[in-house]
Image (cartoon, rainbow, N blue to C red; front, side, top):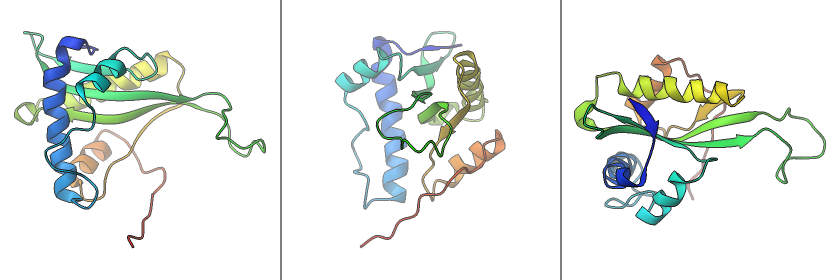
Length: 161
């Protein structure tokens, strides 16, 4: 079952956030700090109550979290960061900020089910697309996203000084 995350889910979500951060820290130790998480418990609690930042969790029959999708609803109208020139059409976007399946639960299609759920929610609220970012070197995530039909939209390049 997939549902909106609730305050009681914070401990398990925090554990999964740690798993994701460790993957990123192993790929980019120059950016990510091992042993940390992306959000504090208080930040997670605030995110869970924000309808513009819905978090969906996949739970088993015992209502235990096995995966999550942190999302953000973006755009849809002109905002301060957009140019007055109108060179781009405004689109409402469902951005997946973070998607994780518990390491012990992988291979059960939970990630695909979460992604499909997010796609349906995005359609329901009138989004043009679902987007996300994946770090270079996170090959298993990239392979998963390509397998479920995602395609590169743009590439962020860097030159480390």
